[in-house]
Image (tube, rainbow, N blue to C red; front, side, top):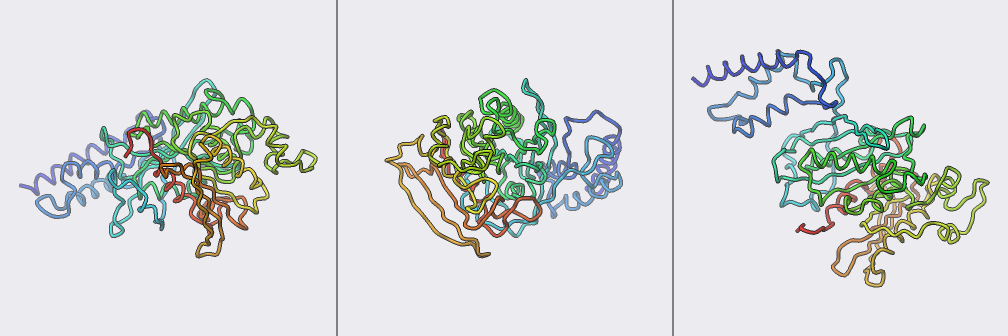
Length: 414
C-alpha cells in the first residue's frame, strides 16, 4: 500500500513539475529552489525522514525532479543563469554570541545547507535600485518566528555578488539563520558604483539614496518574518559612509552600524571636499590642513546608534583619522563621563596585529567598538580572496560585527 502511494505521488509530482515548466510571468525576479521548497514541505509534514514507513520519499522526489529537468535552481526567467551563490563552510566563533533562544546553529556534523540569493528591485520618488536578498535554508516563514536582518552596502567598484563573496556574510547567515540584503548602486547614479555619501541630498532622511536603502530595508522587513528590533546596516568605504548616514537619518530603523574603512556623517558636500575628507583633510591641491580645523567645519551631528568601526592604519584611500571621527561622534551622543573603556592589543594567527577599544555604558552595554588594523590597507578585514578589497589575514570583521550587532538590546529584547 505504501509503495503504491509513493508511486502515485511520484507520478502526480512529475505531472505537476512538467506543468510548472510552462511559461508564466516572472515573480519579481525571484529565484525559486524547487528542491528545497519540496523538502521543507515534506519535513513540515513529517515525511522527510530516511527511516520508517515513508523511507525513500525523498529519493523518489529526486528522481521525479531529475525527470522533469528541475534538479537545479529554477529561475523565473527561462534561460537566465543560476544566480544562487554557493558559499563554502566558514570557520568562526559566531555561535558563542548568537541568540540561542531563537535559533541554534546547525551542528557541525550535519551537511552544509545553502539558501536562495534573490534578485529584486525597489522604486520610490528618489529613483530605482536593484538589490540581492539572501534567504538561508533554515528560514521558515512562520508568523512570530522572526529573524534578524543585516543590510550590507558595497564599496566603490563593487557589486552585491562581489561584496557577498568577499565578506562571506551569506555563510554566516546559513550558520545562524538571518537574512542579508545587498542594495546595489546604479551605474547611472555613479560611474564607479560608489554610494553618493558626499552629496547633501544623499545625507538626509527621506531623500536621495538614504530613502532608497531605507525603503529596501522596510520592504524586506515587511515581506519576511523580520524582527524589527534587530535590523542592522554595515558597509565598506563609500558603503560604510552611507551606513553612518543611515544611522543618523534612521536611528529608529537600524539597531547598530558597522563601518569598515569609512567616513563620518556629512564629511563632504561635493566631489572636491570628498577627496579632502578621504585624505584626512587634504585640500584638492594636496595640502594637509590641521585635523581639528577640518572637524570644526563639519556639522556637529552626533550618532545615537551603537557603532562598530574597523580601519587599517595604512589605508591610503581613506585616512584612518575618519574612523576616529566616527567613534567620537558616537561617544558624543552618550554620557561620555559614564562610559567604561577597555583596550586590548592582539594579533591573528596569520600575523595581523590590531588594537581594539570598547566603550560600554553603565549597564555594560556596548556603545562603540573601535578596531585599528596595524599595517592594513583599504580592505575588509578577514575577508575572502573570492571578493575584491579584502584582507584575509586580518581579524574576522564579519563575525565581529555580528557579535556586536547581536549584543545590542532594544525595548522588548531579552
